[in-house]
Length: 231
Image: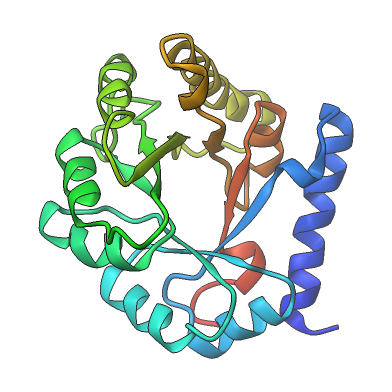
C-alpha cells in the first residue's frame, strides 16, 4: 500500500469509527482532499488511492491542476478566498465553491457559469466564531443572503461552511459545529422543499470527529492525506 493509500485508509477508518459512535452512515460523509501547494503527481497518486473530490485554495495553481488532470474523473471544489475579479475562472472550471461570503460573489458566479454546465454548487462561508482574522458572513446575516442566493440561476445553494477557532478538546470543538448545524436548520425552515440545504462543510484533519458528531457531510482533509507541507 502506498503512502497516500495508507493515509487515505487511516482517514476513512477515523470517519467510519466516528460514524459508528454517532449512529451515522459513513457513506453520507464526503472526504474532500485539500490539495493546495501539492504537486500534480501527488494529486494523481491520491486519486489513484481512491480520492475523487479535491479542494483547492489558490486560483492560479488550481486552474493549472484542473487542466493537467482533466483526463481524470475529479470533482473540483474551490475552498479559498474568492475576490469578485476572480470569479469567472472559478465559475467556468469548478463543481463547488465553499467560500461565498457575500451576495455579490454569488451573483457574479451565477452570471459567469456557462449555460452548458450543471449548476455550480455553493456553500456560504460563516464566520462562526466571529473572528476578525477570518472571512465569512456573521450568523445573523446568513439567512438573508441564503434566501437571495437560492433564487439565482445557474447556482445550487447546498449549505454552509465554517472554519472554527482551533481547539484540542472534543467538546469545545463541537460547539461551533453545532451552531452551524442549527443555523442550517433555521434557514431550511424558510426555504421551499426543493431548495432545502443538505451540506455542512466542516471539519479538518484535527477535528473530523467533532464535525461528524454535529452533522458534517463534507470534511476537508489536507495534512492527514498528503502529509506535512514541504515533505
